[in-house]
Amino acid sequence: MAEKVIIDTDPGIDDAMAIFFAFQSPDLDVLGLTTTFGNVPVSMATRNALTLCEIAGKDIPVCEGVKLPWVGPESTYAHFVHGDDGFGNINHPTSTADPDPRSAAQFIIDMAKKYPGEVTLVAIGPLGNLAMALKMAPEISTLLKGVVIMGGAAQVPGNVTPVAEANIWNDPYAADIAFSAQWPFTMIGLDVTYAVSYTQDFLAKMAQVNPKLGGFVQKAAQFYVQFYSSVFQSTDQEVCYFHDAMALAYVIDPTLFEVKEGYFRVATDPLCYGQTTFAPLDKMIAPQWEGRPKMGAALSVDKARLTQLFLDTYAL
Ligand code: BDR
Ligand code: CA
Picture 1 (cartoon, rainbow, N blue to C red):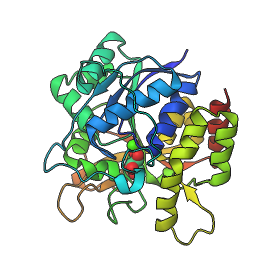
Picture 2: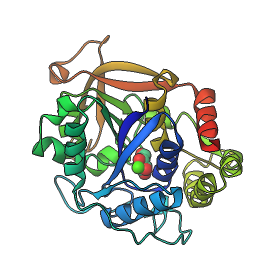
Picture 3: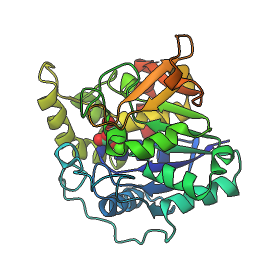
């Protein structure tokens, strides 16, 4: 039976790739999209999520979530990575559909209660909606089947600061709440998402096997590719990274990943703001990590099988 998922998202180009991948997969039943600020302001994230549903012909609830970090000022967003529109400035017509009136947190709570033990929450943006849902209904930690996030870096550097990954850096106080809850929690972080780069050839194949959805991703990703090419000047090929789609791939086929169990802390002090520090179970645990909930961190991925899964699923 298809796994019930909610995707909490800030679309975003790799979010678009991830959402279409989930829509295409026969192994996933996407109950709804919940939105957060992150790559773009939350109002744009909601509009973009509705647009993605419209393109894919998917009639599911889209619920707007938090617009500000748990603590601190409004985010500066990542338009330099995802474009002014979040979709690489391709001027795609925006959906005029209405979002669901429920808040993101309320939708998460409603689904967790409606399908106890069945719903996996896949968070591919900052974690404010997860923190809000936990605050409103702490019991969801035992009602959800699990939580899978794209975010953090266990044993590799960050991508916003030397130590912090973007989704965690955007809202570390909320992340700390989500990382402190007693729910089955798996982190798909930069350890694996930077291990697999995608070239223009791959984007062309996506468009070839699925002109509508893959074609949109190829078009939107041109801006994203230029960003990554300017950051990683050492590469002789133009590439990009589909961070968010890997969290969905984990739900579809966990055997693609090597996951290690351990304990996490999220730093909120100014220097290490947003750092995720990982103490694996088989290493000495310092007192500050003791008593934390046990979590999983993906540390490696089968690149060939993952890439094939993306293409095969888009081709369906
Ligand atoms: C994460 O940050 C965002 O830019 C991407 O959409 C992804 O969720 C990668 O660090
Ligand atoms: Ca994202």
